[in-house]
Length: 438
Image 1 (cartoon, rainbow, N blue to C red):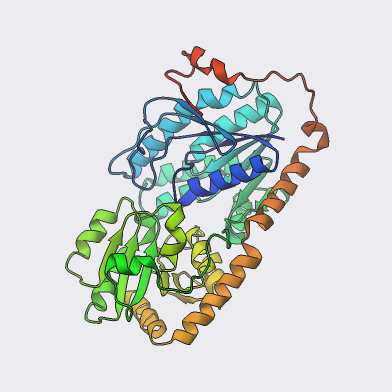
Image 2: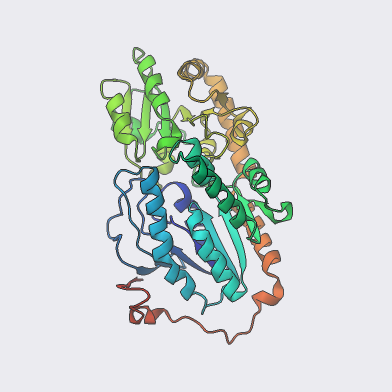
């Protein structure tokens, strides 16, 4: 099966959408499918294009059996609402030629990843031109979140954006999302129930697992054996509400048996470091390479998963999968009735979003109760093993792809024109300054 994936983020990004898109593409390629990806150079969550990449030129490379076309984009140093919109539009426009070029390849499925929904019209156009099936996978309802976070405030713009989102979503053959509640939201926006699909994020429990010794990060960060570590690891952006963690660290600063570790990068990291500058019970790390992820997650005695109350029902944080797999207790912020609330209840502590008092009480309770921490950790890992394994998730994905395309399309005529990779440099007017990396 020929599958084109069109999304903003991709490996070597270590967190968020890029990580999961890459793992999905690689798994499909390993299953024998011909997978190609149009994406941007890596820049997230630092909001800075990674070393060895450029924001202003097209580039072709092959990564773990997947062919990638990287298109230019503008990356703002300090993202705001308006700058984020320009950022997303810059990629949607610059990547469109690379997407449409794949009309010669004639994919069976065109899958686009949201964020960013700005890519969706191009994905639909290619699917219509080639007779391919179209698939929209939603990692985050970005329009809802943008207005709830106050990034975009104009009421008329809100109505227009939501109407455009509904119009687009109804035109895809499949609309998937990462939680049942998010799938329900897609149906409420007009997607036919038969076209909606639950495709959760996954975790490899053979790569993330509990270790029976202290994490090496304790020594590196100068944390004593008696101290219990409260760990936040992930993106440091607006919707995480990390200021509540800084306030909790301040409230517990007099204790020498609780240390907060913040690991990650993002738009709000500098402000968080400033707030914690005088607190002796805080440590900061940048994002760690994937080979040290298990060591990092095992640093935690307690994982914390903060969320702003106004977006807590819009997202299912992908970082929860690794927290569960590490068999450590979790404190999450979520409202009753949300997917996050239901996922953590019975496997951790769920508290009111943005409540410093509730967070400090939960941490204090878990610090003094090692048996409860251990029980929550065991329940979380069992959930990860039974419900979030890559094998189970990818098997369901492949089954839906095959049923969507059908046997006749998979065995489409063999004389289809194949787009020659080596000629990409000759197509200067369409893809200028292409750099080929094998």
